[in-house]
Image (cartoon, rainbow, N blue to C red; front, top):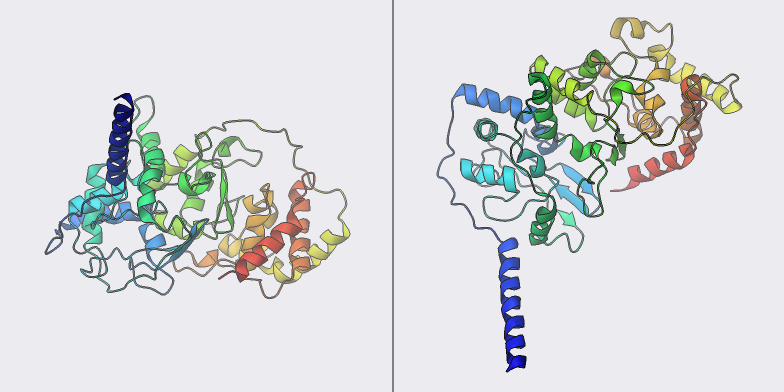
Length: 424
């Protein structure tokens, strides 16, 4: 009798466990709508600003593709994802989604038909948005031109190609409610916090991730590597050895050249051009909040940065290459520096950083021309500078500002980046 009782209890637990697992890995479809709900122009305009703050077009518009039609490849440690079509096309986009379906996707990461969305879509942050902002974002997306386009199939490795497993990821990381203002802080600080931690999802790039792709607890905003670029730590920027002030950070965030620090490049460039579309007070609020982020630990004490007393042979080679390739825009007497505010490179954040990665990436890839910031252009040197030349220019620039902390990983970083360029 006792044995039967134990077996019965085990079977019951098994049934309950299977039921829980089924509930975890399945969500019902939300019925499609015959026509998307239309809103007034004011709601659409508010939604446009929220979409810019959330970088929707940055991810959902592929190079040469239609606005918001998706197809941009996102490389992750678990494979390559392609962003989806979020235009109001009824067959390939979200034109049959109701506001309720859209809100569920934004808060829970579940599509209208019930399948789980991969957390590369930052719903862990979007769930912090207000109901009104989500509704306005829906209103804006339903107003853009519908585009019939289906993104390529994702290429995810096993077991992450089994979408229902995302439900267990959600169990670990999908927490929290819409942000509420903290009464002990100013309205500007609270607005910046909302934009940074909600629609802007800044910590998703600027925080290290754990083995299953969740932001590491206790290390938010401590920096990471994204798409081969360093997303620098955002903590302690106001008190760093080479500090930022609010005017500089607002300029950087809005696609301009920040005096003494340089300009956005790589994955941050399109983000800055999106922020430039927001009201100026929003960019100021973002900068105000970020500059208030404190370092979580002091870390190892480093020697102060000082210039080299005497140039090395490698730095002399770098100086000669700099004169030929860079000085016309960045040299002390360059007319471009006066007319277009191009920075002297020795004091830019890329040169002052602990890693040479962003400097090397900028030299290799350049900065594409943008109608929003035409002076923010730099040609790519990937095919005109070899690894020896890149290293020499990097050493020359670093020696001018921080020779006391030379980059010990310079050559491996260059080789690593070159190898990444060859990957499909």
